[in-house]
Image (tube, rainbow, N blue to C red; front, side):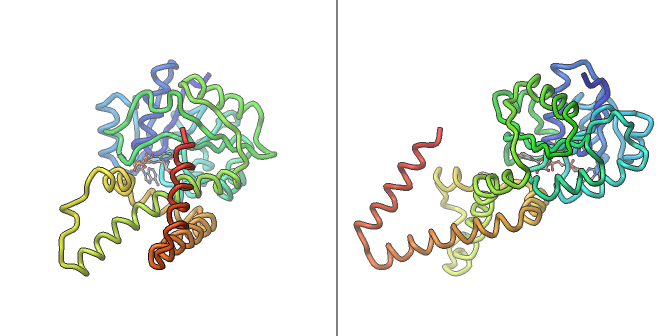
Length: 284
Ligand code: NAD
């Protein structure tokens, strides 16, 4: 199917993808990363066969699939570099990025109809190739975001590859993707980062080191605030409109909760909490 695969960004996701593909498909994997240590580690861990900090070296590797696994705001410049002689007519390009929307159309305008937008719904707060997991995508959903222009043959091949590594593929419009994941993934990350910031503010205000006291609830809730800051900066900026709307909605819900507590509205407060609990229990 794909004998020569290039991974641009050999971190947690790129590494996990490489390991997963290698275990189901005989192929050569070439890694590109701006960080030479990431490449050395990736080679040592047998995640990639060879690698370079210079993307132009893909010219001689001649990949039939290129997978972008860098922070999303690097995609455009990487696509422009790829366009300068690293791709053949047959090369398919896809990505693992958390934002689609306009970015998919930008990528398509540079790379053409053999670009297939993708977002695996799997991951952790950990980053770096040393945390890569073989089998990360097994049983997990992967969203592919084809457009009117996407070549059906390229889409079918990328879909087959995800299925081969055990993922359940779902197609979604690129803009719908950003509304959905702005709400269920990007907002919770924003809230977790803000909650840690709030604890810092309260620590300063009270003079008590509140970070000494968190229990299991706080740790569960804020686990994702340990995620990579560059990756999340890029996601927030790239999906700005949807995140702003989600934050506004969250702020108004928090204001409502504040009002119910402040005015001691026992019935309504109970109802607010009951409804939230019931809806949480509906999630599998
Ligand atoms: P990571 O920090 O572990 O890896 C990113 C790698 O990209 C690093 O090795 C870094 O050196 C390299 N890099 C950065 N800029 C580069 C450039 N211009 N050229 C070449 N290499 C560059 O991050 P990650 O968690 O693997 O995330 C990668 C992508 O996957 C992001 O787009 C993210 O939105 C997406 N994603 C992450 C998760 C998750 O849970 N971590 C889940 C779904 C999607």
